[in-house]
Image 1 (cartoon, one colour):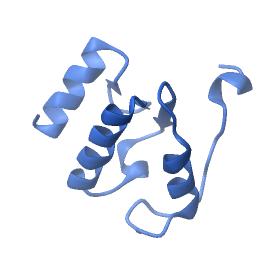
Image 2 (tube, helix red, strand yellow):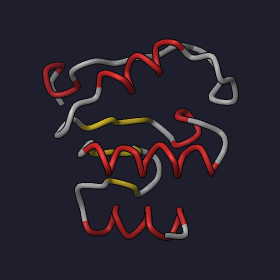
Image 3 (cartoon, helix red, strand yellow):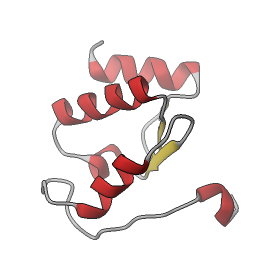
Image 4 (cartoon, one colour):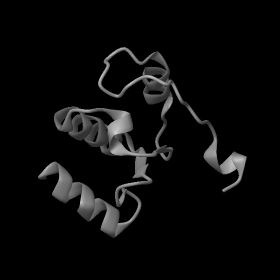
Length: 90
């Protein structure tokens, strides 16, 4: 992918287990309908399944797409949405 396709890359170098991640919070606030948040792995976004479910449900409600490069979750594809449904239990 070209640099333009990626838009912005954020690497805080902080564990997903910590709650104080200012760059991630700024990123989440800046997401607009139609944007796609891409993470290397779900545990980079957060350690708690409950928090991940809440975040991804919020993305859906806001019209934000999500993709995890390691897990087969891509909310733009039927397979990815099914994977998310199995993961979230919903």
